[in-house]
Image (cartoon, rainbow, N blue to C red):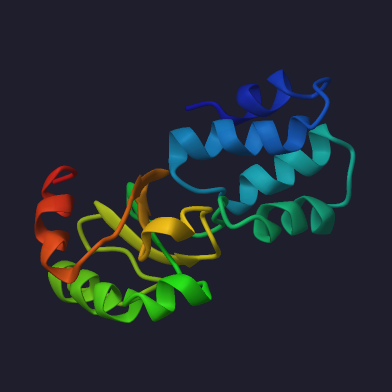
Length: 147
């Protein structure tokens, strides 16, 4: 995968840095430091600013992570509805803690802020696909879709 070409394709696009990061991350699963450095060069910004963009938005990751990113909302409505129990079920089923990836690189667990589905809490997303009103007992069957 030629990340340099992907980044250069967005050099003249308004909001191109974010679009380039999306495109590279779709290929690699994260934004390695050489990608951030190349983006800084192409967009003619300080490396610290390019890194700031890569770390500010929760949709980007600067560390390697599992292919299927599972995010659980940690807002108050999800918390009250039982998100902690869903977290426990996810960690038990995958054998990793929040913020980690499975050793086989298939799953990553992350917290996120509100995903706008407060009418059906708790909510998890896997690669952006929402699962609403999640109960701990549902976790094995939900994960089976991605194994």
